[in-house]
Length: 197
Image (tube, rainbow, N blue to C red; front, side):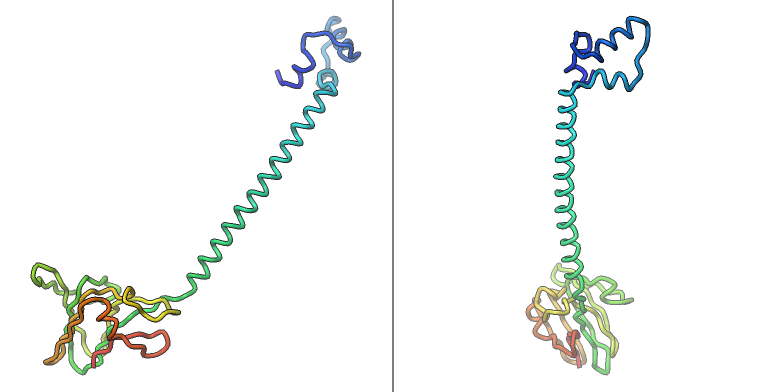
């Protein structure tokens, strides 16, 4: 039985005329309507309690809505920040063969297929360490790193730790990202390259 009905007392006596009328009806074999039951059982005190209950519920809902608005604001702020930060394009650091003949590129660690195109690297065992070799024809390029457009390249943007370039009778050996970085030059806006001539 609901609390607001218990407060009146389902089996007790009452000075309420409606209550007395209800008892009389039941004694005479009449059954009250739903509206009559509501009028009989919901006393003024119970109505006050009900009003307080719904008022509290409304307050909770208002608080819940405020919290939801704050949460949605935080989420949209985060989405906008991520979108703005992703607007900076990433550009490739390129090794380009501008020589008139083929060159050999020996490097470590491995580069993925997107960086070296359709070339299949040859594996070389150098003192127990696997390194990789590919050949570039004249005017061919490979990617050796990436850089965000608004920044100049740094050592951390280089994907290789070792790079050796063999062309003609010459060999260029670069050990470490910093050494490789020193050979990269800006060709034009957003275009950084290590050029072999």
